[in-house]
Length: 64
Image (cartoon, rainbow, N blue to C red):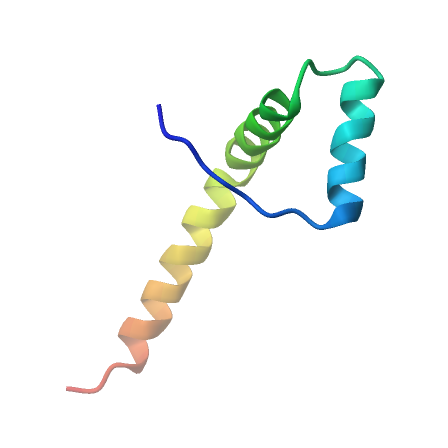
């Protein structure tokens, strides 16, 4: 397992703590892990498409 250290804006941290206080999550780690999992799950295909488009554009602009 990898350990990450992050800095969060105060407002975002307050929202994270609110989820814990409401009983939706047990601790900060579980909130962040779930948020990252959901982000990667929903954005994966969009990120891949973005990177492919950037590669194609780079290739078309390249001059030998």
